[in-house]
Amino acid sequence: MMWQDFVFMIGSSLSIAFLAPTLRDASSRVPLGTSLPSMAIGVVYGITFMTLGMTLSALGALASGTMWALIAAIRSPTGKHLTGRLLRLESPTLLATDLRRWLEAVRSSVDVDQYTTGDQTHTHTHTSSDHAAD
Image (cartoon, rainbow, N blue to C red; front, top):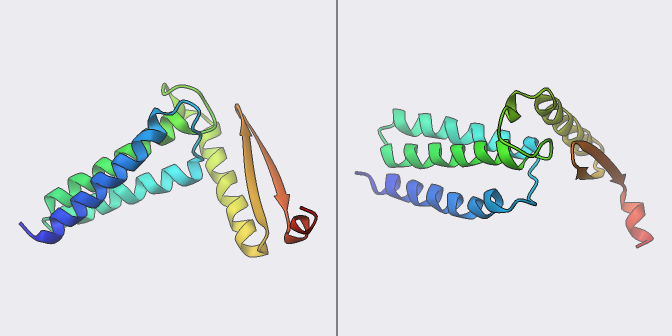
């Protein structure tokens, strides 16, 4: 066993431990634009580690990807329960909306804050001149 395999597995285990409170907290809301890409990265890393023969790292990365999948399913702002969450029409739409807003914010150098209430998304956009009044 390579020592690097063990180090990557420990890192994945720590990320799972740090994500667990988010999964347990019923008031937590994590945008799909955060959780779904993180889930995909965990799965891709897991597969990559497996092809390198780093079994412990692969299992850790896949477990981390699974944790992100659970967060996407249970703690996204678009719903309250696990059943059918990722198959609902709002989920891909919300992800696309989050990505569009993020790209617009990056291009325009404007801070974008997202506030979510239930199944509705409200966006407040402010510029640095708004902060001068604060």
